[in-house]
Amino acid sequence: MKSVVYYLSIICVIFAFGCDNASKQDTTQGQKTDTAELVNDSSSKRRYISVGTAPAGGAFFVVGSAIAEVVAGNAPNTGWEVTAEATKGTQENIRRIVSGELEFALANAAISYFAVRGEGAWETEHAIRSVMTLAPNVGLFLTPQSSGVRTIQDFAGKRIVVGPAGAGFEYFLRPILAAHGVTYDDFTPINSTYIGAVDLLADGSAAAAFIGGAVPTPAATQASTSQDIFFIPLDAAAKQSLFADYPFFNAITIPADTYKGQTEPFASMNVGAMHLITAEGVDEDMVYAFTKTLYTHREEVVKRHGAGKAINPTNVVKDTGTAFHPGAIRFYQEIGIWQE
Image (cartoon, rainbow, N blue to C red; front, side, top):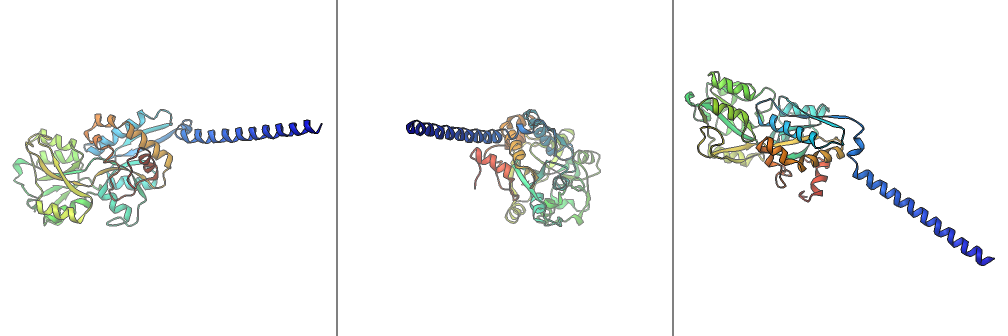
């Protein structure tokens, strides 16, 4: 009898252990499933995601629209409705990112650099984070061939387009002008969108205009095809001093024949790379999923604009002076391109 009781006791212990172990396995499996389906868990909840760009006519608008379209078209189980929104540019984008009006936005890295530190005209530190470093923002000063303007010093006493009001171009334009011995006081600054700048050059209302963005920039293409345009060169010594003083400036050469009438390579410079930003407090899982979707389908961005080629393993993780969001870092670590 004692023998029977003994064996029954052993069987009960084994059975209990097996049930407990199965329960733990179920729990562990459930945790793995929850992690794997972070994006799909939100499929029942519709979420509107706005991507801030810039005024129509610039590369920011085209690239931002491409990003929104590509993510929207390749995230079917997220419940996301992703749309691009035309804005005044980086400064508006940064403010609206911080206020929560935009989930993602394109920004000029030079302006972000000052905003995140609360320097320059930024009175407080703005809690933005980088998601992806994109194409260089190549700066050009254009003038009609007939204007007689051939150097930046020739701006004196003339009407010069310096970009849209509130866009923050002064963060990189003032240093560039200063390196050439010129200030805003030496000419009449005109605020205009890129499309407006092309019209102002065409009708003689402006002697020159700054146009920047990824190459090719639509407004520069429009200007060079609608009239004879001269590309104003930057002084070599001035560029070297800018490279030494500011981390967001670096040399860029525009290949010959990028624009009509530009038959030789043109020595320009990056005036602050385009980068994708979000707010510091945006959900890590959402940023991870957005980054993964965009990076995975980057070739679709290239089809819409050549700037999409910058979405590559080397470029996307480049440090522009703004810390990366943990969600983006997690994805870059996952694919082995993040540099600690």
